[in-house]
Image 1 (spheres, helix red, strand yellow):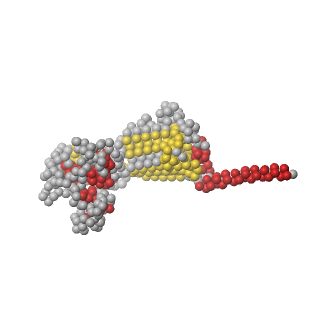
Image 2 (cartoon, one colour; image 1 turned 90 degrees about the horizontal axis):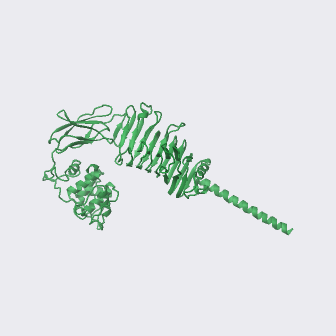
Image 3 (tube, one colour; image 1 turned 30 degrees about the vertical axis):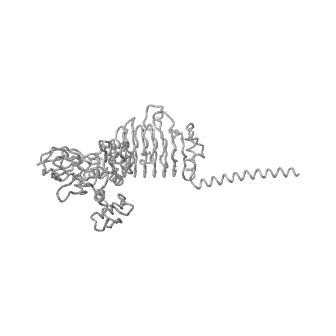
Length: 566
């Protein structure tokens, strides 16, 4: 009897143990589910770059989808992906990748595939820092061009952030439609880096409310179109509505950095609206083709390529001097600008993709009256803009002076002026007070009318407001003794620092000046050099402690303000 009791007691203990394990697992699962965040490691991924992880990743996504959505976390490591099957993202799913996480495409022979497929879903995020590596160099087939890193089709509310996509058989990112919804809507692609993809960096086919921000796209090559970004609907039923491209950087793409082809949507009932903030960093070209018959607008910076609205079509013409062989300025994109003297044409050209024009003319005498007109793509003429050819402003700044154009540029913007004697005195040294004033005016800062808190800048000092404004903007600081020393001469080292701060120059030059290695301003000088603002002297020195002359500071400031002087 005692023996049977003992056996029963042990059975009880065993069942109690099982129940406790089951309870703990149940509680753990409930807590994990309640947090709506799971780790993909829990679903059997290997991270060994040997085993296909697609099925395990998909199981994690499907589980989150079944409970209404949530986040799947990917620790750093290499995940092998069968892009024919794809990682199929579903409603309300966030894929969050730790830095160092890599989705590596398994080589295949398919013409069409997607590593991440976002199709007919809503509320999706791909965030963190993932690198998607394609298989273009190991591709087993020779046909097709539609192997995508991330495909977004017929989907709403999608965020793609900080992705790196390289070496795809087709596009890095594709944004388009499905048979269920012929556009994607509310799409954000932030900070993507796309390199060496075969067909496109990004294809934009049909979308409403798209923002592509701070994309860096390089080396697209292999099969046409071979663009950084190609905006190209497939048919007249598709949309390009409220498309914004901000801070785009492209380089060395086989075709164009940014291309817009509209031939498929001529006479469409869906007006387009595309805004591009700047083409300053699009180093491999921008183009719009087949724009006639398309309603809506494309705006590049402050200039319209096509538009349905009435805008000011008068050209803005820069000053023309008696040594000038070009007339330059701005107008609506792709307008025809004509320059005449006494009603006789002396030059014409079309404005470029940023609305800038540069028209070669014979050199004209001072006081000659030029008449400039423009005609836009629709054949509508501007008013006549008259420009009088100017002679030199100061007798001591001759046309042959090495800094003549830069000094004139700064003078015309009222950033600097001459002396009562009528001279400019280009070799005079620039004081800290003068530099503060010039920077404040160049940057168009709001001038504050308060006395700066420096013991040597009185309320009566001529530059007190400029010094206070420059100090508030972080361009200048005082000395430990509480002084500003407004009359101290600005050295070339100090000049380097304030220009780097003012214009946020970045980079590092490989030039090693013999007198800079131990300078406190070494980093600032390097940034000026790499951005082509300043150069050294023929003896491989920079002379950081040498005073900055008025001609030098005018030149460095003009180069900072306008790339054409670099």
